[in-house]
Image 1 (cartoon, rainbow, N blue to C red):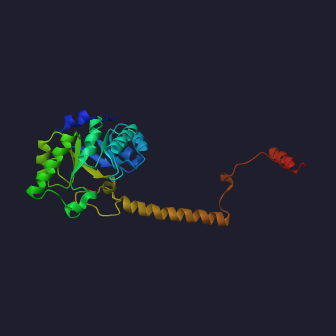
Image 2: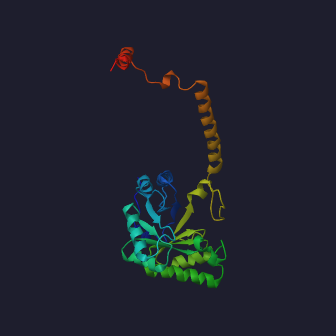
Image 3: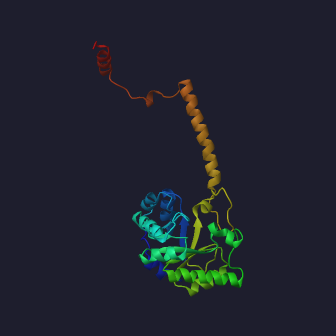
Length: 265
């Protein structure tokens, strides 16, 4: 049985070995991650977080706040405490630094986001890498430092040039969780949908697909249709239910029942 990492462990491992993190959608994926020895998992607070925690009790779990759901720092802190009650080891907060600091001030491990941030893509000119110019790279570094000063334990660093990400990671104390940002980060992070190959949308360049679940799910869908059709046909023809599907009753008990039904009231 694996031992769940603590925040202290994460800091101790910085620069020692690459950590792994997977975004999971449900308890089954969480359980599979734990069985596979994945160090950290992350999910949305909109998921069934309690079942995910129960499925992977020994894996470091970050619960992500839904961006835009909280209009004040106190609201974000309240969400963070709820996440802890549901088993979180850390909370992801994509809101402003004031929100992050308020959470950190309560002693709650909090994770920020630098580089490309999908829900703020309009500021970057769409979905593309961030930090390919010196000016952009400095902004990523400054943002990372700002999260560190606000009390964050880590940042997700998304699609930043690997040399830039490696240099920033060396110069900060917090954990840099890389998504498409190279091996110089402290952790490698992917979504389960990409790893398993069931992504119905765009698969990003940095993602590596390890299985073809999309094809398997399509096959299972057709098998489901066939099974349901056969059931309907069996009911129509009388082939279902058969004797083995029925519950019997002793003849004498049945006769007593009929007699009781026919007895005048």
